[in-house]
Length: 119
Image (cartoon, rainbow, N blue to C red; front, side):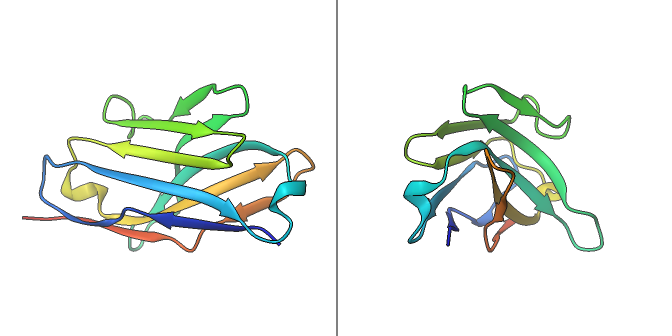
């Protein structure tokens, strides 16, 4: 099995920054080849949305809501991905989820980490 373990969420004031990290682990993680890893978020009453994604060639893509403020980075060999979030706004408050897609088409999700932007 493969688990995605997230860290870095918390409470931050508007305009502040947070860095989320995610690492794949588990008994079978060494046998898994990651195609892409990414970050999603889900705010109360809203659908889960893709924020940013990075593939095994280190090509990154962003949702409009993340462009210019968020930056994704990853280490495919270590099966790790991070999301640097700057200039945070109250509307960024949500549960943030790590996601991984393997070459053979499996999708894994982290348990989610709460990000709250409030003064």
